[in-house]
Length: 194
Image (cartoon, rainbow, N blue to C red; front, side, top):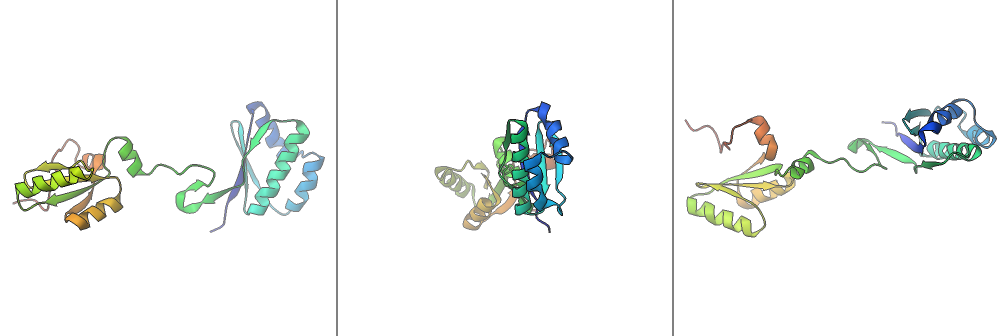
């Protein structure tokens, strides 16, 4: 998988179009001199309103492109903010200069839902009540009905760990449960009782 690199240049919108044109055809003297090292490279240049992006296939090419852009900005007296060279993180589907995206688990937590649940069937109602009290003292917010206890967790790893500690089944929680069975408040333990 090829590497992708870029620089981001934020300029006033009035100058973004002109910068794009100059990079495409009309480089100034200093920028032309710097561009000689990149003659055999093809750099993609795009614009999104007041931001110009230059993409390259190597860090060295991106750094050279940054020097060319900065020379062009200086020559024309254009005020701009140029990013450091950014690298595309394939596994995270983002540029390393951007903050990580929120996971669906974090989105569920932001909405006040626990994204994962551990469902535990205690032997008796008293055991369920004691377990719920214990979990509450540990900072959890368990739900108890009869001999059943449901405990929400912030992530899958915590749910698996709690399940190993207490027994029980790990299931998606929060709004996911409501989406699967919209309007259904029933949390089914085990199979269907026939």
